Image (cartoon, rainbow, N blue to C red; front, side, top):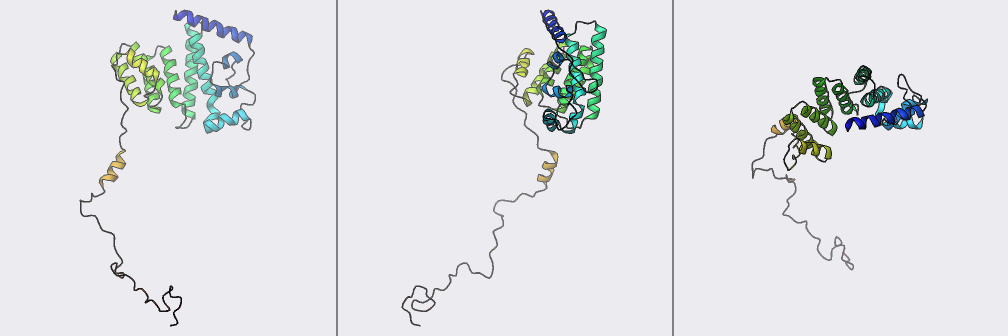
Length: 265
């Protein structure tokens, strides 16, 4: 059944490719219009003649989101396309493996080139894990999925892919521990909940993790001496003012009394 689905998907992909012309591109990223439909929206501008024109509305829109890392996105889009094509390809194993190796090469470039805060680091590491898994390099795939979780602990797909590979390798307890960890961070993930049930988790679902107070804050708080009950310092009163003495009121009938309308003195 799964093979039939892949076959139909691949035939549909090839049919679209024959019916579509080539798109423009930057560097080696020159997808057909059909291939571009398989990719995220942010890949489209990099496959157009205006892809490097920062003043173009589509380019400036995405460049504003990604910042300086935007100039490297066509490499990541190439990796995504190659990984997807390898998954759908009816070619022999050697050709598919070549696509996956090229995808890994593109990802390695992006990992070196982008900033440490690159928003897609977790996703990119997960795609790398998928490609390595397709190449039957399970130990490296496990490391890539763990790298994704370390990059962004709130990215649920990394836990799902890591757990699935662990279960595939017969490590069901480890798979359950992985999705449990994920649910402690991303409680609303339906996919993680399904995986938790599949790997033998029992209700209720894991409670969220309580964030630990950073050590530097704990250290600073420990240096504050506690105040013993009853020893709090009272507010200081100006010694030149007697708080119990009221100011002398003027005698009625004197000019100092503002309410005396008929006083002659």
